[in-house]
Length: 562
Image (tube, rainbow, N blue to C red; front, side, top):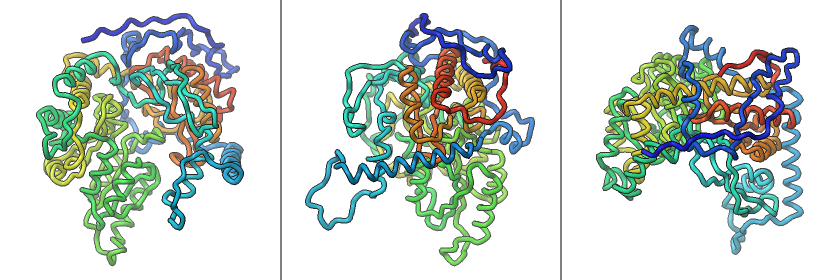
């Protein structure tokens, strides 16, 4: 096993405190970082959490306390603070001003895009508004998205620098690189690393078995390694069987149509992922949407749908009713109220499909997702879905449940029968990381990573609340959306943080409502306290400069313990 590089922290410029601006109580400044961390001056750590070695005090895992009812605990730990009225007005005004400027630009200037010739009389192939939005609105901040990197996306990453000379129509590389603290990747448990046991065993597997089988599981792509992975996945979640696929998005998009048909009713959370929406549209099922994480609205939709039946078929009963929710909602940072969903599923005799793409590994004392977090029997969930892209630092997805369900999918799943099977080194990365989480490698590494992620999540969220910015979601969620609202501020924040060597992800319309532009931070077990303190200092200064401290909640004047 390759040894870890040593870690050194060198002096760099210090900032004048965290800038909490709680002048009534100077003790708040005790949170100010004395760290000399800076991404450019740190020897690469390659995704391994030094903090687990540096901070030995015991920390709680991400686990529901169970002292209150699930409903009360949800309201106590989840925040969706409303936007101030003046900010809402400015946000709409700014967005519509961008649209007006775009239309003027379209009238006066020829766009620098390829155009087809000899198409007179043809109907437009592309949606007119999508083309306009992409060219004249999104283009203005296009440099903040799809930024290429040339390193492993661990606690830090290396951006390839690029510039545009024509206002976002095209880009060219400068030949330089920028080392940044990585707060944008779904590397929840820090397994995305260039060194260590996972990397070594994956490299060995690539040398022994090659890079791909170039065939589906139903033909030449099946092998002992994938069968071992499916058995391990089933054992990990405590269910009878599991099936794995080579792509996380396709796990939803190409399997839901195997489970649902035109006479089925699906009750779907309004914030569900695009892969779920695509799969449901392909299935032909009737889709009824309920308000995000709202159990009263979920029950209303279930009750009305079952009472009235399939109105397209004369009110006859549905052949199947299914509830679809996510464990952690990746844009909102909220956690599904699973015990209440399970209770409604049993009351109305509906099936439950749970997408744990972001919660598996990141939630629960054993890293098994929201079923582990709430201590819900996984067998109460009919279909457990998740991906290997986030917490496992790999690629692909899985469905887990009863043996009867999995046997059906092995025969009927489009993703199983027609798509290529998982690459050998990719599968080995999943096997090694999953065994590490389960403790089957004979070490406490997996448990330490789970604890470290929980500690980082609570610390970072509480410190952001103390700064006065608005964040969404549950206090135990490692996905932390910070609201900036204005479309122009998304670009300003991403660019400013990049100049300070922090890489983040911005999200705006149409991925979010027009009113709710945001910066989405993703925390990792690989992050150290020094890294988080550095990020918080920069976020604090940037929030002052750009006016991002919208929160009207009272701020905690006391130092936040790590």
